[in-house]
Image 1 (spheres, rainbow, N blue to C red):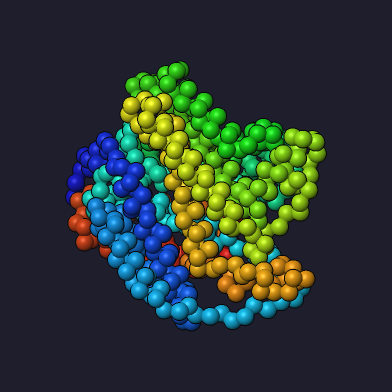
Image 2: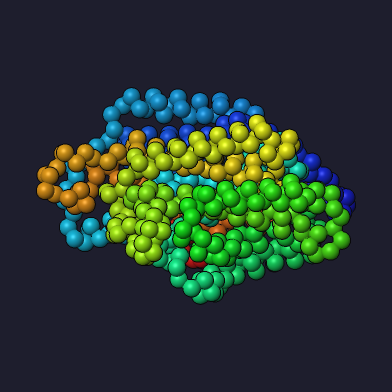
Length: 509
């Protein structure tokens, strides 16, 4: 590098330290570029018969490049970026949609295939965007083109990077609802056997966390100790949360998951405020293994609350009916019988989904979380300082839940707009709606599907690329032009890898 390695390491650590954050509104405006880019993509897709839109180059330009721009060149004027994409999208909306033809009855094989796929494009889009913003942010933050207000806050504050961590955990919770929704009686199966199976699944993630510690300590790679601690890192947190969730399965059988999540969030805040854990994190010296990793240990219960709120959202959006899992809980509490969905057979065919009801419930929950966040800040339940990712306080938990439910709702509303379900009155009353394929089956971008298929692999690859780039280039002294060249190349490399692996699941947890 032409500079003393130790000196540069200290300069780099100072560069990413001490941030105080931005505002919730600013972060929401930056994130809105993701929604608008999807709106533009589907507007184009619904008004042309060309297949070029689904190819990698055009998909990257429309769906990924705006995300990169939103956190770099347009970070101080995110609304302008959204407007620049909205203008052509609204202009194209004036033209008629490309018709896909009249829906026809399905034969048995087609019906089975459609039911097996059970597409949830809005969830695919949400998870892909969450992962992309995280992947782009972990490298972009090392360049001056990425505003310091968007970097992780030292102690208190809101920022894009702080949100990305919580969104990753929330998304993990959403997907963890799959076995609960497919078979709610899974909750009553022996805890030890579930722990054994889950331990084997998360063991590679834990190993990655340990390997990362060894690599960071064995090189002159800059590290931000106040993020998680001396030896702790995000991979360790991700590995522990599914195990902690399983220990709560006997409680989840009887208690609404959202209520349980809030109760644990309150316990987290009680520990921070009453038992002084917040002061321990901020002021106590690192004199032993526990105190050296105080951030990771203290924040774990808070991340569990985020995970559970994501799990609650998953039980609402994954089944065909948002009340499916609640009916199971009510039935169990009433009779003690482990009947699925209150006696209703589980279905997840897109044609039978009640997305309008799901959207209504998502809206209600998002409003609830935003209202509770406002109330928390108004009466300063967690102190006057505000949101803290470092200790994962109550405000942070509610902010992450409010943001994620709101954006999942946004993606679902776009699905409903671009791919409305047909009216049942159009068909023979004696013909089941299950036997009719909608005129417009909701689809997600193939690039997003590819990213989701190997999400953890892509995240690991991005971390490797980020490390190699930082060990090779003095990123904090790089001009904006070259920073954007590097970031574009990096994002193309990560996305191209996902695209190349789109037909293969490399690692299934």
